[in-house]
Image 1: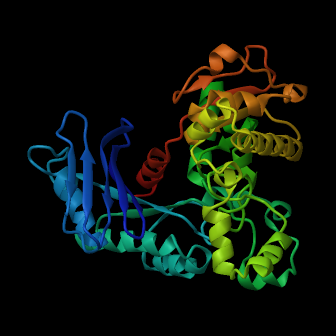
Image 2 (image 1 turned 90 degrees about the vertical axis):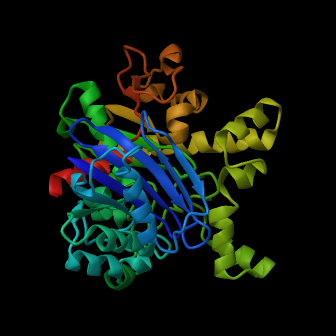
Length: 397
């Protein structure tokens, strides 16, 4: 099946066309600056790439039309007609407690997505816009599927997702741990089971999605039982520019001292903190590595704080699951930063982790990077959220 995967932002739209039978990416690209001055990119193997500016895209509907026009273009297209695109899969950030799996979109689902807007006010409206634009351009008969960042974590037990707040905040306002990166964690844990040659139902896995946004997930017998991000993606590890977990009393202290309102405080926590805030150098781990190598102690501290934070979560989740069979590294830092992987694994020997420095000297491809005699296997698995969305869509369309 040929599935168009859409990830719509407020003024952008990422897309991939995949063949789920071969798992091949037929074409991909990005619509940017929708409603402003419009930029459109398109890449397909063996075809001429498009990188066009000042493309008329006043709304997401025109952006979708530009994508379809490129896909069916006689010279550079990859399908003969729009009818060859059999379904559309949408990345949707938040499904709340309503959706524990991907779902075929209908009017009832759209109403539920609207109800989830307060939980993700910056993301869900854009995702909804993308769905409506596809319906307008492609027609109501093309099946569309919503794949949620939060759905995979809906298997967490109450002991993991409940916050120690007055319980009515959960009952009335649904304040709880939701977790994110679920599509990535689902994909890499399934691949881990394949690599290990064991059924996922028999495995205890810790998935480390490490990048500018980072989260850890404890996946026991194929189900997420805990994860580091919380009510929002701000929780958990220190990230590129996000603070991760901290004492909430700090907010009151800083807001009072510097006269900040909550919007300004959240901007600090989301945009000015994390490894960028500590280092004063960058949110890019490559820049931090270069700075640390040149003697920048704050950059070194930021890197050490990150690996220390990941290490603590690995230990905690191994305890929560009563053991661990494999640890998975994925996403930008997890896939490409051998030094961070070694730093994280350091001092985990007590729980059966033994790394192989030569095997770990790899970037961006599937590999077992632990020693042959390591009791706990350590895997590098590049994530592929678009493929996971396409496969879920094909199964439901």
